[in-house]
Length: 260
Ligand SMILES: Cc1cc2nc3c(=O)[nH]c(=O)nc-3n(C[C@H](O)[C@H](O)[C@H](O)COP(=O)(O)O)c2cc1C
Image (cartoon, rainbow, N blue to C red; front, side, top):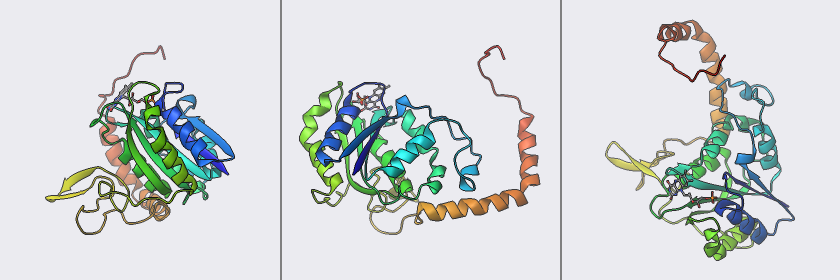
């Protein structure tokens, strides 16, 4: 069995990496691997939508390699440190490329755990919710989630027992506990917003107390919807081009001069 942890940190053996190692060891995978997104070249999505219709990605970087590793894994630990109340920017670059998921059929249903690592209690922000949104998109079987606090590199060791338990839940050795009330029962996020005077989940729109989520369909169904949009785009191309041209005339964009 292959266990894979994905982290994103500039720190070697910092809190995310140590958490990943404890979880992978506790889960007892025969093969263990960690991908640090900082070691990869991940460029921003160019919104070409070609990955919905053809194999691979038009961007030449390491994202496809990472998705292949994720596709091969039997268990996943997604770990993000909190940077400015949210996931690390490398995780966001990774998440923004997930139109490619369409091409990886083994990822759906993979047992997984999600960990946010923050330095300050109360400043965890959107980290765990963003990982929950990503796992919701990937249709993972999320078995445990935790918002952990560790500031200085190595401090996460204080929570070794908790991480070992999470590793055992990942492998199935320990039964998954039902989510507490702090998590949305549909998508697993723990962030909420107001909509028409009601508190709803910030990710899927499900009202906190009762009612249906706004996002109901699976990611695969969304892929079909996106593919249909291409025909709409082709039919409305001229009209959309007119809008494009209207705004192209406004030359407000600035960028640094690099001699080119
Ligand atoms: C640029 C930067 C921004 C940070 N922003 C937050 C934050 O908003 N909330 C928080 O709780 N911790 C914040 N931290 C602290 C880290 O999340 C914390 O130190 C964490 O343990 C780092 O994990 P790592 O060792 O795996 O990189 C920030 C750290 C850095 C370097």
